[in-house]
Length: 411
Image 1 (cartoon, one colour):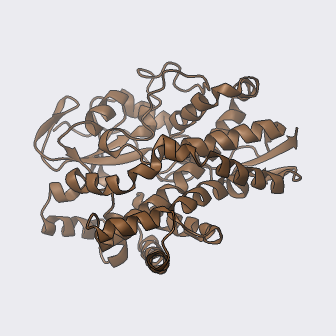
Image 2 (tube, rainbow, N blue to C red; image 1 turned 135 degrees about the vertical axis):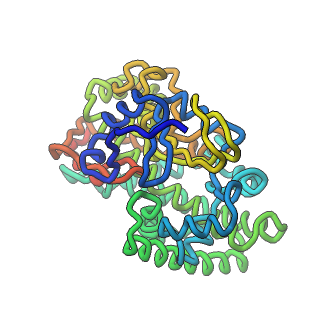
Image 3 (cartoon, rainbow, N blue to C red; image 1 turned 45 degrees about the vertical axis):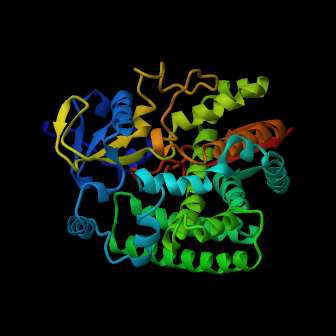
């Protein structure tokens, strides 16, 4: 195994939150992979290295393929993942963190509602909802784009698909954020208690909602999943784990990339003007927003055997960290990688992952963003940053502004 480097890597620092890209550049330029002791993980930052790992048939996401139950228990204890009964059942196990036949079986039950054709049918409904949000905000000269607008759309849309009443969607966002935060580097007892308590509340809410759908089925994903459970395609825990995952995945990352996407347009005003002049470029612009500021910049894989990875030998059960945020700024893959280009083509970024774990909701996320930014530029003749430097979230696993204050003028 190659030696770890002396490269400083501090993903919980304010400096990293504001601008992780100098660190990512240093990781890309270092020899081989870099060992990060805090996570016991070997970091891959170059595009080609990330792709080699995520597309390798002998890499998996679940520890169950590489460790005994006793070893898994010990590792959870060491990482403070233990004594979380509901978080363990419904969050630590999920469609996202499963592999092979289990992953394929669960994904098949929900995939059909996230195809381009099915998602496209939601365009008019999403547009009407976005218009109503803008109607309520257009008389304000200044807003927090994240809290006042972006935070209301993804959860509302995914809630409609699942079958959650509109009035409950704001609570889903709170649960989701409090559960997901425990996946980052800081896993203190306080954050652990918050994650477990919110998982329990989320589960109890979904239990009641499921009982309602069992009594009176509707044309929603919850009713589809109830049928799948009755037919033996998923069990009780898999049902709730999958429902939670879809609702959580439909919230945070899209909110984050909406905020960072607008921030990018504000930092590159010529690109915003190009979108005003060429509305047809919006689809490539949305893809560039995901590349330029990947909202989920870190994922992991485990090797299922002793193997050569990125030019070095690693033992079975080695954990690898794939830095999508670094790979998407790799100049070897993306010319002028630190430049935001709304017309960038080709743009084979990794923000949605690759292979079997390619993001199920990518079409829905891109549609949300297409509608929101198209509507924003159509309805407002100017949009400007109303604060000096927006603060970004701290952590390795998320990327997005905490808030984004903008001043705007209606068209």
